[in-house]
Length: 214
Image 1 (cartoon, rainbow, N blue to C red):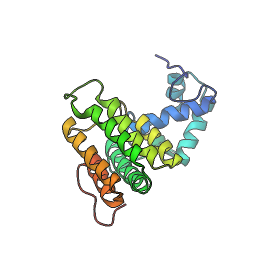
Image 2 (tube, rainbow, N blue to C red; image 1 turned 135 degrees about the vertical axis):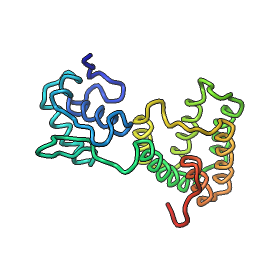
Image 3 (cartoon, one colour; image 1 turned 45 degrees about the horizontal axis):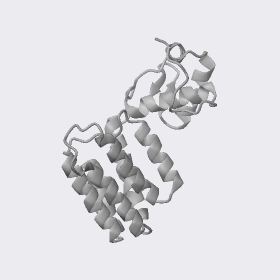
Image 4 (cartoon, rainbow, N blue to C red; image 1 turned 180 degrees about the vertical axis):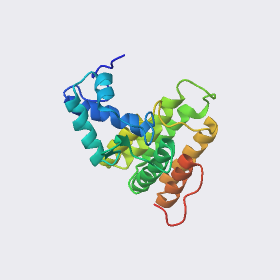
């Protein structure tokens, strides 16, 4: 079935090549199309209901971003990685969010600490599989990003979360995530940027921050 170009992830005033580029970028970052996957212009044009021209323009842009590679014999393929899309996303999140909490620790106010605790309290008694957990977790993390007071970081985190279907997922119990959030807020309240960064890194990747990292 041909997909429509009207999509909530891109502005309605964007050009066709902008829309195709945004959708292909999300497909690649989310892992929907994996490393080495061949991107055939004719198939993509049919899928998105556009002429080949926007497809070519989008692929050129993605190549400049390093997400795809072009070869005379193989055509255009998704760039190879030594890790899965989920592993790459986790590493990038850990680096960016560790930076974010470092910045937040230097300037967070008492009222903002109280807001973080209130957001985390919503998650405290949620049972495993609770339908509202993902939204509550997102609200907490994005409040932390906002406290870094760095618009570029906030924009990057929005893009990264949007690229992951259903948002970042973890195998840990909800209660454990809540406790890690509490430890993070304690570190922010103490103004301890190093401890906050270490907690966030472990929260995302499941192992401590290496000495000298981030």
